[in-house]
Image 1: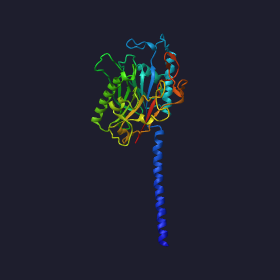
Image 2 (image 1 turned 90 degrees about the horizontal axis):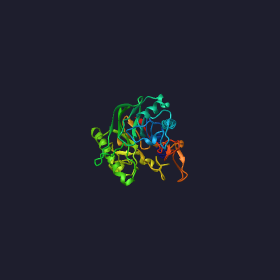
Image 3 (image 1 turned 135 degrees about the horizontal axis):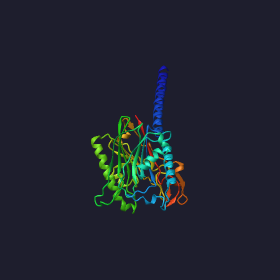
Amino acid sequence: MASLIWVLLNMINKYYFLQVIFFFIYCFHSIAQDKPTQRGDIRLMFYNVENLFDTIDDPHTNDNEFLPGSQYRWNKSRYYKKLQKIYQVIAAVGEELPPEIIGFAEIENRKVLNDLIFRTPLEKYPFKIIHRESPDQRGIDVALLYRTDKVKCIGSDFIAIHHPGNKNWTTRDILYFKALINNDTLHVFVNHWPSRRGGEKKSNPLRLLVAGILKHKTDSIFRVNPKAKIIITGSFNDGATNISLTKSLGAAAYNNKIDEKSLINLSWSLKDKCRCGTYRYKNPWEMLDHVVVSGALLMNGNIITCAGCLKIGDFKFLLNEDSKYGGYKPFRTYQGPVYKGGFSDHLPVYLDIFYE
């Protein structure tokens, strides 16, 4: 009888031991699941702002559509209204504080960036600008803002894109930003790849060209440091499964077999969720604005991110009902030459980065 009681007590002890183990596993899993919903120590945002032009004629670019006398009737009132709307998006993405790193596409010049950070409530924060004029014929550029209280710039560059068979063809530069964050180095690339104007098939070689140039740059970083922390973001005018991203750049979906030098397109994880895109021309939504990270950022170090840390800023105020195709579409500034008074034809994306 005593032997039977000892066996039963031993089983009970083992049962409670297993219960404790399962409890801690559950708690750890819950924390891991909750982490992507938290505001990161660093929040990186990218936003294609749809033609942020000032009202001044630039004789070196084709900015004629966005002048007071054009059919768009662009004027100071609409310009300052758009600046405030962009600030509203930045504030919504940042929550309590604006994002520490903000990449942009479709800004005209440094003046519009200065106006954004000094003529809106962003003036309360220590932002600095990374920008240079690109050779784009319309005069639209990529740019980056960073908060100097959380991010230290240790280098920047602009990668010019040259077409080997057409010297007259131009597009936006790729912006390269090298930062020190929590004693770790982060490499950030901001892109705005050639559009699909003229059709996807005709324009595809142009995006393949830019992707190859970017890949050459990331490979050179990996040769120096195979554990480099890299983030590639921007408007790519291609989806996650297009060959410009999958083959030319080598950005794959997240899986358990990644290594530190892998390039992982976190946008894959969004394609089956909610609106599953950042842009909607007709139907359906398309994921044209991506965030690609190196595998090292998903592993360990002073700064890390996760597969679920990327989100689309699909706030209600950024959307309009789509009476033609159903559902919702971005509340844009212009529909053709008709002023709508909205925000942009793209939705923003943002990524949370945590200190280890």
